[in-house]
Length: 117
Image (cartoon, rainbow, N blue to C red; front, side):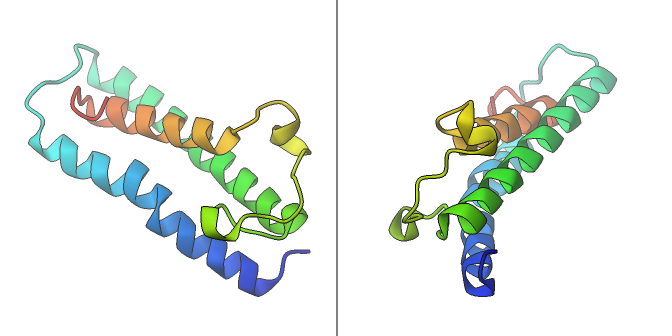
């Protein structure tokens, strides 16, 4: 079981880094973007929300694995002392990157923003 301290550090890192890169920055970029994807709004919204949901779920799962099994956080300055090889990590070497890319793609579709893409 992950300690509350490790979970708190994981949450702080997740809000600070992936939350900024895959949440705040795309939102700010989309406000300034004049180009939109030539995709109907309903389809873009459904695909974007789906991708975003899968990305957030995958990131949460991988961050939990780091904390619970590895005893560390996603932060490079506080990595897990134990290699995590179960769950999604048994199929993909860097599922956190995949999760963040799914979130970014979801944001690009959700806002129909070429700049975010």
